[in-house]
Image 1 (cartoon, rainbow, N blue to C red):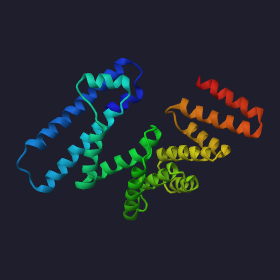
Image 2 (image 1 turned 135 degrees about the vertical axis):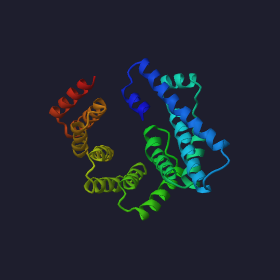
Image 3 (image 1 turned 30 degrees about the horizontal axis):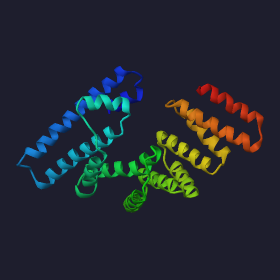
Image 4 (image 1 turned 90 degrees about the vertical axis):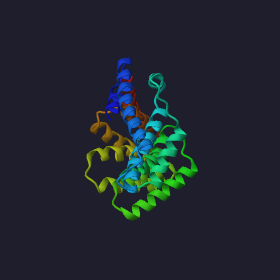
Length: 257
């Protein structure tokens, strides 16, 4: 977590070295746990061994997945320190944990895989793959039967509808999530997703309204959200032949620059 927070603030090579060092400490702890799992012969019970194994495999899977997607500048430092990330190994470890082992680590691995498939891959232009979407749908349906009010899986359901092209369904689901929870940080997520959904339908007024809400509520990545607001306003000005709106969009573009 410390490394992630540093990554969000990294602006120079020294910050990147600091991140790499903290990742090294984290990986060293994982290695010690893997050694225990490999060498220990006596366990309190088979269940306790499985829970420990699930935790180790979860950590190892997340490590491989994270390192395999690190930006090139930071990746050179991480590789120099002797750590590599293999995406296929990550999926092997996470899948084993999620679907074959018990405990909280199993559920965390399942959530990691689910949101990688429905959010990570699409936004990083790595997918999604049809098989991943089908498997995601199975997980969501299964979990919503057990936990029908789960915000996490309802968000996943809405996101899956969005990337599958069912935009009206996604809008309905995101609005339902928004209306039935009071967690402020989740509102920013839903407003952002609703803005994108309306933009996909060329409903620029709604896209602008939701994007402005995100812009007012969040101080993280102000340039990105301001740029989106500018794009939506420019698109609306073209559709409506509105020079005033176009001028407003131009000022927003200038503020980002």
